[in-house]
Structures are given as structure tokens and as C-alpha cells.
Image (cartoon, rainbow, N blue to C red):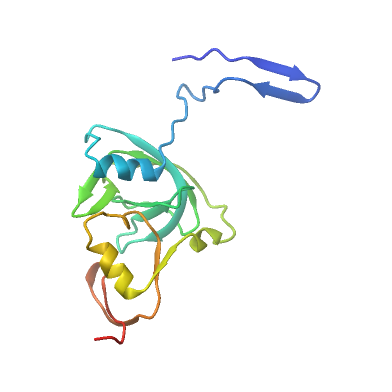
Length: 173
């Protein structure tokens, strides 16, 4: 479709009072926190298509990215993508649930990727928890940690397992 826009030109300044149509599609990004909340509330269908924009903050062993947006929430993309940590990406696709993990399905597409992130300030946007606080929140049924970048202090990795799972020791047991 097309949108009527009003443009005001004054010297070197151009002001647009309506959204601009780019390549026939108006950009509609969905914040990751809204996707997570819709899934938790059961207010979505497998036919819903979402578009997100954010920074790649991690990759799993299959080179499938975790993307954090400006809301500070993170979502897994269950599709191998040629992206690097710090890349700014736009991803579109449907969302599925695997266990308690809310993720984009293997049908997701990488719309754009900019390898322009020169710093990793986004990694400072985390929740810091003690091991006991993490256990309490992880198993309280609220899914309040879903999509969050978490730092757990005071742990020692004692064994690395398959699929980037780790066995840890907090020195309390």
C-alpha cells in the first residue's frame, strides 16, 4: 500500500510528518519484550510474523544467534546465520517455544546485518543475581528471566556439557 505524506522544505531542512514507505513496506519492528509477553500470555499464533532489530550478544554451538534489542531483552534465533558478536541485525519470522525457551523458528530470515558495532556496551545491560536468587527466580514459574542477560557471581564451572550446558559449583554444597 501507499501512504500520503506531508513534506515541508525550509532551506536545507526537510521535515516529514508521516511514516515513509520504503520498498513498498512500512517498517514495523516488534520489541522483544512484547513478543515474550504475547507468547507467555498465549496471545499469538504460529502464523504471526515478527520483525526485530538488535545486537547479536551470543551464539549457540550451531552458530544460531541470541539477539538483544533496546528493551534489554534477548531472544534466540533457531537458524544458523552468518553473524558475529556485536553485529546489528534485523530478523523477521515466526516464533516457537522449545521447553521454556521462546525463539524465532528455523524459518526466520536475516533481513539485514551491519558489522559496525565497535564496542560492547550492550553487555553491561544485565541482571546480576546470586546463585540462590537465580535458582529461586528460574523455578518460580513466572518466566521473569526469559529473554534476560544474566550475570551470576560466585560460580565455578566444574564441567562443560553438550549444547553449551555447564555444571557449576557455588561452594555452598
